[in-house]
Image (cartoon, rainbow, N blue to C red):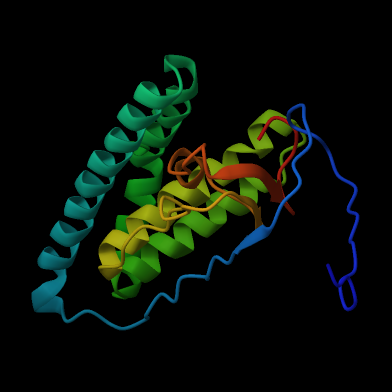
Length: 197
């Protein structure tokens, strides 16, 4: 076997579980959502609010499906994380602030929802308590799902991973992790997160 041109890279990190994996890496690149920004005609504002409400309903259904999958493939305890995701979708402050932003600016609902969600994510990211600080990832995961529904984009997932690989990513959301084929993922390495995330 010719080893020229191959170099070994050793990275240090925080182990979240026991064991060692040795194999090829699968680089999971997540793209930032491009949220269009435009003014909604006054005659179409009721339809825009209805579109937002429908996106919340569709996202609730998606999360319920992910939760069922986790319950079936892992455990009830693991599935409980998605209760927090459902609570984000039912957060009246988040919904009310989004609608207020929409009424004030007249901008499309994606722009308004994204602006409000980013304020929440930033606020949670600044909290001293590690557990609460990590809830910013839950809010980011849920709001990303809502935005993808509003934009007509498919949810990102790792269900297509078919060969045994070590998944390498900047971060992996709970719903993305739930979609990973456990027989194909030899290990997961992320740049963000902590032992409990």
